[in-house]
Image 1 (cartoon, rainbow over the protein chains, first blue to last red):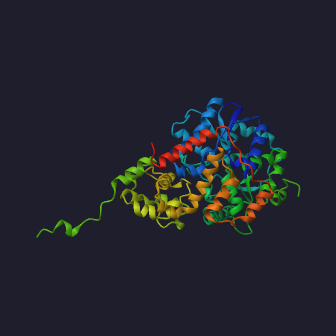
Image 2 (image 1 turned 120 degrees about the horizontal axis):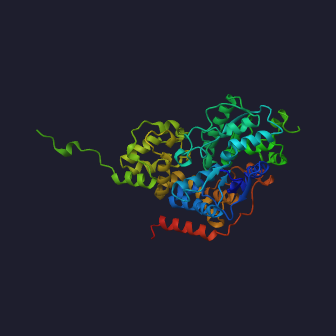
Image 3 (image 1 turned 135 degrees about the vertical axis):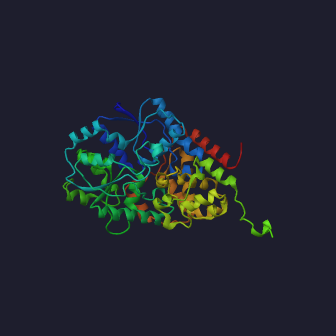
Length: 270
Length: 192
């Protein structure tokens, strides 16, 4: 990927509950000289509901987007982990297999981009202790995503280290948060998110960092109790470190308000 | 004296075609499972299950659809794919769960009523607009399940923060998307 202009597939969540991910993804890419062109007339990837319902439907929905992207002739970048997973799955079924489809995290963790991030990090994160949380859909199945193993993940660690976070080591980087069960099986999601919170606290973290709208929604709204940890999209912390104004418009959209924590580390005005 | 064969009858042989059907539809080599239980060890939701993932695979191998479709476990696979990453024989159990959900008879759906309602609500908004609508999803899900008051505070908070988009985005290619859904319905009803 040597292009600096990419097709951008935001996906449905980024127009609603995860709009903060969309805002910061666009702002961070612009600041880094990566130009994003939203894919014209894109449709929903079908997400988990499609593959639980009909095999062929779950391939045809993302395939339409891949066809549109192929016509554009640019590599595709996808911020949402679920959309990314479905587009890659359709490619594994032979749909536009030669098209390059990247997760936003992969793009921003590339060595030359990381260098630019370091250069532009005017307000490094002052050793804010966080755990990078990748979840499932960015990492598995490994054979579809061409990642080294279904349980390994390091890109977010690199990005967060580049902006001065204290990246805590923990063993639940790729443990499930409950994903699309948030409405149908709320109790299960609460159990899984509670366990992730306990593991993150044990690792010394004060916040989660994610690259998936479902991970954020679940952790942000389904940690039960008083001691919930705030959750950030990794692009939100990039926006903070790079001094981009868009960051401050994000915080009201977090159910577990991160502003006290950011103020404690001198990253926003109290 | 030679014992008569019917005095030591074997249990009913299962439906061998069941394993083959599920294996082919999911693209998974179900017959290679040797019960190491790594899928179950990794699975994050086993404590909620009546049958564990490795037990479901064994029942599929034995050709016994009834207990598989009668279990609640079928509807608890969250699709995290950890089972597949852990499996030494390259079986993605979550793909088996997908196919079992897709093919579940109506009676089996009772165990997965909430998840089925969620999926139908989600896909209804996609079929209609070409994109998912979070507001449409929540309203349809609540009406279908009667969980009218669940998450009320959260919903109002999201509404107040304008996180929910009230009007769904509609794409120009809606007809193409609707055709995909029509083909899926025809497949389900066994139409050519």
